[in-house]
Image (tube, rainbow, N blue to C red):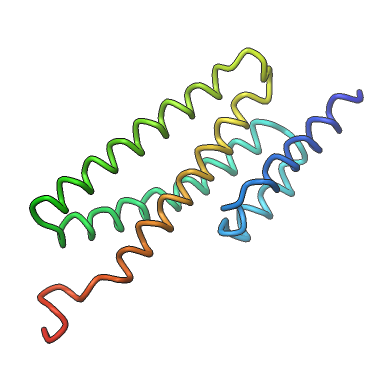
Length: 139
């Protein structure tokens, strides 16, 4: 059964090459280690990690949205729509790629998590540069 060790190694290498994976939780790393190369278990780990990042992305986006007005707000909304469209299209494309076989869902989820982490961190960085609501002198 050469394919199982190859699948485990390939998946581990795929996950290790994701730049945002350094931002993923120790719980995710432990979950993946315990998954023992079983795809369904690995997908469960990814789903749980996505569940942690998605609210962070939404919170950062909502903060930026509520603190922006006019052209800046419209630009942020368009930027988010563009990101989301690409995010969903690429996630779907990878999941249904016939050349990826049984690894397709893992590839798709790996992209989804990496892309979500990158976008979340970018939005959170922008939030960190904002003045407090009501201006710098508001108390």
